[in-house]
Image (cartoon, rainbow, N blue to C red; front, side, top):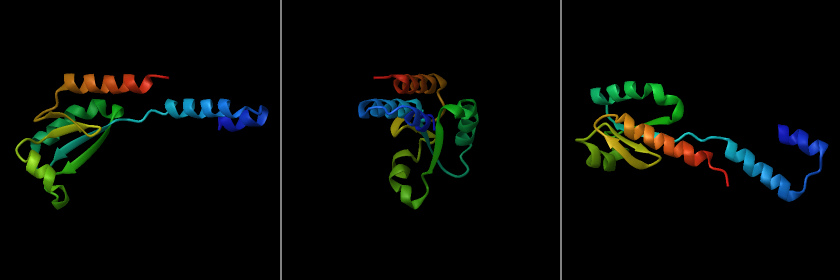
Length: 117
């Protein structure tokens, strides 16, 4: 919206427009994806979700039911270890939420996301 008004007032060059678009796209923060590998009636998973609640504004929680037939690979890998957590597709922790590990990884991702060229 602001860029529209700017271009009406001034005719910026192509490099300036490209710079502005890059800058604006970097300002949009994308939240990391925290994947919880779980199954029905998993009390440890329910407890883990309660522990994660205060951090929910810093990530998107995606739950994967390992008992779903489409997730048989995850079932074979994690059937004795749930809850298991991945952050952006990479293993993070299992059995319970380790707040030190979670906070460290979130801080790292937030720091990396705030780096400007």
